[in-house]
Length: 173
Image (cartoon, rainbow, N blue to C red):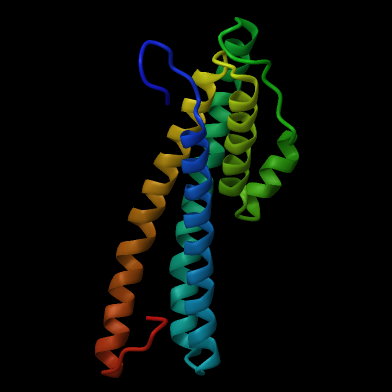
């Protein structure tokens, strides 16, 4: 956010949201790569174990995301009606949002929403929606923290166990 007396959403903030999205997609890509590498090597059990860890983490994060979104929806509407936030509207309805979370895409929807609102705020030099963009960024940050805790430790432990068991280390591990 900007410096000095005036808080505003700057280009740097928008760049950091884009970098966060890029790291999220990179993490997703490496998880797919690890599972595919085990599968191609014929290690179906280990491919399934890694996939199970990744999917479990994703389901937990999506559940938090949906619960937070559903719980905060009324609060966002009331802040919008009071003029503290820009008019609250979602481009995605409740049913579609529930489906996207079920398909494990809710986290991506949050990033896209933050990029959309952030770009609009930067382009229009809007400061009214600053509280909303801070809310979006905080939710994304907390969800990334949960993802790191739930996925990294079990996945690292599993990879170390596999390397010790096989007495070899491959690039995808």
